[in-house]
Amino acid sequence: MATGFSIIGLVLVVALLAALWAGVVALHKAGRNGAWWCLFSGLLLATLGMIGYAGGAAYLFSSYTGSSTGSETSIVKGMQVLSIAALAGSCGVVVFAIGFALHGFRAASAAARQRELEQLASAMSEEINQMRAQSRNP
Image (tube, rainbow, N blue to C red; front, side):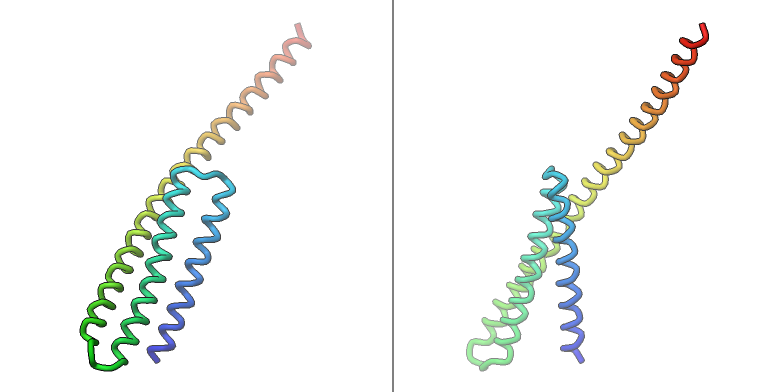
């Protein structure tokens, strides 16, 4: 039963990472700014952390099921790899979240600027129509 949950978890993590990578690659086409670099580096760090965690778990499992000679140092090394990978993954998620927030602020600013320009264009159009009406009726 635990193996089934592990496989489901692995599939979900791979699907999540694939979706995040697709988003970051698509955002690359809009331009590489500070927010994009935060998203990219955070996702890269999180991906490497997940790969390291899977590798550390496999190493730990193989050393745990192996012979008893030297298994204590193998288990300690495996736990160290798991700890470092978990730390890298967590730091990657934090950096990604910072990049996501920066991107959100930039998108909100661009939307506000777009609304301002649309209002300005509408006001200018109305003023031009009024000027035309005045020039026709002196």
